[in-house]
Structures are given as C-alpha cells and as structure tokens.
Amino acid sequence: MKRIALLGPGTFTEESAHHFLGTQDFDYIPCKSIDDVFLSTAGGQSDYSVIPIENTFDGSVLLHLDWLFHEVDLPIQTEWVYPITVSLLGLPSPAEPLAERCARIRKVYSHSVTLTQCRGFLKEHLPHVALETVGATVRRPALPAS
Image 1 (cartoon, helix red, strand yellow):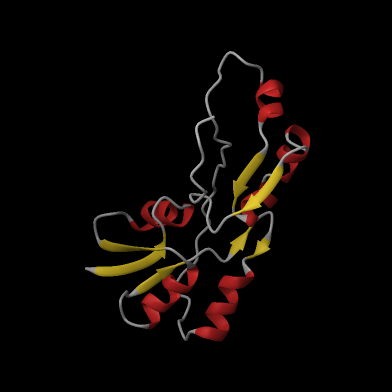
Image 2: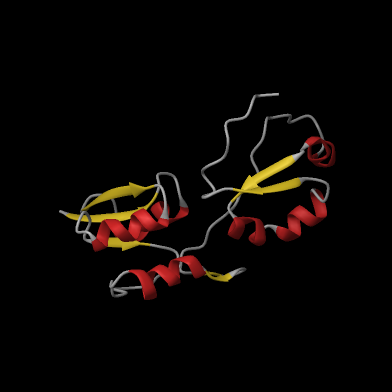
C-alpha cells in the first residue's frame, strides 16, 4: 500500500486527497507542518506528498514552492483543483441576529491564507476583531467556553 504524507488531520489537504484518491488504496500519514510532509517523502517514510501550491484568492503558497524547488528533489506527479468552503465557528446563539453575534467576537484565529480568502466577510461583519494567524485552519489555541 502506498503511503501519502499530508498536513492533517482535519485539513483541506486531507479532505482533497481523500476526495481524489480515495481512502482504501493508500495509507495517509498526517503531518503537523509542511516541513514534515516534504521530509517524510524525501526521507522515504512516505511514497508521495500532497500539498497545496495555489490558492484562488492568495496566489501561490510560497513556502510550499520554496520547499519544492529549493529544499527537496521531489517531482510534481499531478495537480488537481479542489474547491473549499470556510466557516466561522463560535459558541451557538441561534436566537440572536448575526450582527449582534458578530459584535461579541473579539478575535478570529485562522491560517493567513484563509484570512485572505475571507477578507470581504471580515471587513463587512467583523472590522473590530483582532486577527491571529495559526499554522493551519484546524489548529487554534484552546479557549474557555465563555
């Protein structure tokens, strides 16, 4: 069974790999950083790496391209386009209008690329919030439920 390194678990990269390659024929190796993804394949712990290299809103993912062209000798095997949907998650308050819920938000945690993708919504609905970048959209600091 072929082994595939990717950012994960719970990332859009993992979701797209499962969509295009399936889940039965491959052993997926979740990695915490893009460095780990590339080093896994370059070092022989995996057969392939799945990485995002382009983003419709933000252009090329430069760190990933730098790794691909300057740090490891791994050929590009294929490319695919996978559309994503981003959600703003928080504590539920269904009876409250959107404007009131947004007014209570103080900080949004997300990957820098995702913040760029959502800049229109953030500017319109959350111009007052602090934006904090994290390594991947699925990672954020543990927060109290208040």
